[in-house]
Image (cartoon, rainbow, N blue to C red; front, side, top):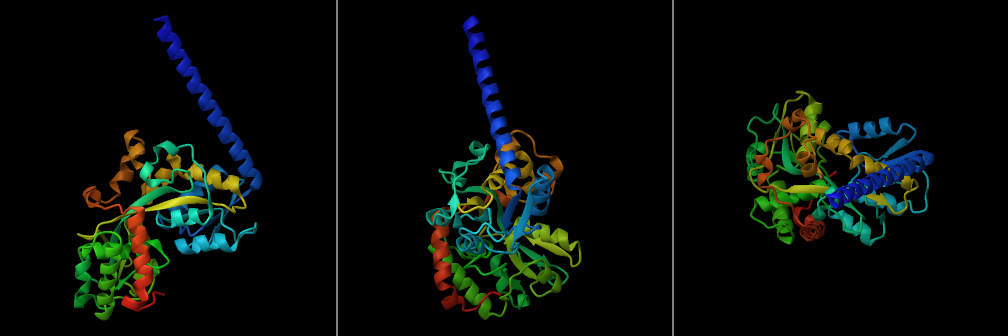
Length: 366
């Protein structure tokens, strides 16, 4: 019994020591980040994944760190180019952190654009959604959906194949150029899979074929769809991640009325990843930002913005997710058949779309 008590006491003391060490490390990081006084983010629209509230939460917690927001509507490619073009530049145009599509993470690591850092909640991030060395790690995910201006579109499309109908002439748009943005790139994958393709080179071929047909039918609008174009009626149907579509619907507030649909087929889930620039002017502020967004508070901030945070299962198991927050999300069955494409599949798809878009579809998305 004495041995058991001694072991229990030893474990308790060890846990207290580890906890104290962690607290000291966090205190040192906060001090170093505060001394830097700035954090530069890039491509974080406030209506994307609840980022407006997440950034506000970080500012409230660390009021002595100013947040400089670059190019809110930029793409994953724009983010990496900003790192490349600002190597050695410590001014306000050099990003400290990036939020990019999963397929862009390995490329950035290979090119030496990002620096490894493992957040304190590292162990609760699924192994399949993070680089083993800590170069990048998944932050949130959603499924591909359609947002529809129902003041203009009376018969809401239920699936990708419906978009070919004559009634949708000049109605459908992507959220950007699929060769430079992850969201439109994965929209093409979703369409290809709805046509019976497997993720990868096959989904690229079938997706390009689908968009070529959509363009020929006069139903594809080569304009980057977003809240404003939906409201104006320029792009009454837009393919977007469900969390963006739901946030846009809320922003429109019934003017016009909008409905979010998860297509019956080609249901894919897309993971985005976070990384710290290898040339970050404020490396400690960058690490503190990571600690914040991977804390329970930061993760719930994304969930409140309709995104499934990467630590969702851990949060759910510990019962820290408010019931009202869960109630705002689409029904669980909408996610049940979602496919999570592997990095290799995404890479093959990206290569196929980048190489074939001009030749097969032949239209520039502005």
